[in-house]
Length: 512
Image (cartoon, rainbow, N blue to C red; front, side):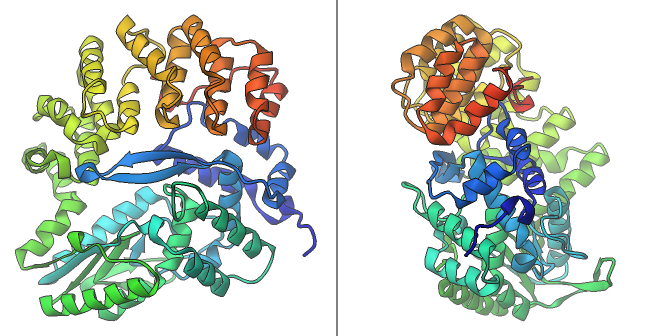
């Protein structure tokens, strides 16, 4: 095939908007929020050249905690990979998910008028999912709840390639997307599609269409309830799916078990597996009771009436078994307690936080609002030095409680310097340690950076090293040297050169 003019074929500006929309809920937050994006958009030919390049970039690996001390293997894509991946998927998004069933929520195009790259906001999708779930659960006597084992990680490459080839037209975009996906599957230490990626979620939604077909076959119409769309009023169906979390409702438990068997077979046909440990059939009052654990609308309704009992009951359930407490419910509770100044069992949250590392990103902002700086520093240092601090991801989120603008005690500065000087520190913790150290003690930061630069080999870690060094006032020739050691950091170096080594703005996520 002839060389493609990607800058005129793909919409990199829309891709950048979509990528930036992922940042808030990302597993990894870049301290400078990837300033290379604007630099690349000013010269989209660079991104086109990147698509055509055979040079393989190196994702950084992180482990994100799950309930009960499980670990979610995730990757941090280099920004050129992330932008081009999103642009390729955006270009064929209508072909991939334009016909996605309305009962499937999240990471989808707007149902009424699907346009490529124009996705429905996930906050709206979540509200609609909760509403659908609640309405359906209250109208049926039986409900099946299940999900898939390691959804993104377990999709087999060969079957995914076949599915993409069958769904997409044979052209440059299909070829480039297939090549990118294949490179991702070859990442050492990780399998499957990158997580917390809109592009990956779109592909996964396409891939699970056969499961939606089984659910639709077994579904009924929810009485008296319709979806109000511009095209028409359409009856709601008795199933919902939020990516790999699935609910189906009906009148008989036996029908739900029959559907479960067919779902297991459909999942097996695409190389995936139903999670038996998270599969249940509920009957009678249990149906809405368990569905409402996810819906949470009863809590919100009560709070509007100045009643806190439903929230307190949810807190009680979570703290009774913090290790297995739902991450979704913990985030919900923490957000409501913050926004409504509710302090119920707050001290116990701080005592039990070590047992729920999967909730660190939700608990940290709550602790920061109510506890003094001195108290938090003591708590953090005790936590970070304990055997409970098994996940660097959790340590990093709790470190965010101490803003760049306010100098902490010497012990916390020493902790940050010590972890920064350890070449084994993964990017998720290294990034905030170096950013904080550069802000709190630039002299110490320069000393640490100079001492470790020979030990840091991963390209993304060296990028962090260089940007933190530039922030701390390291000489330009050193910053150039650190970035020049890897070709994939060329864009970062060119961006700094173009800006005369001006300091990129630190992300608001890393500041106050």
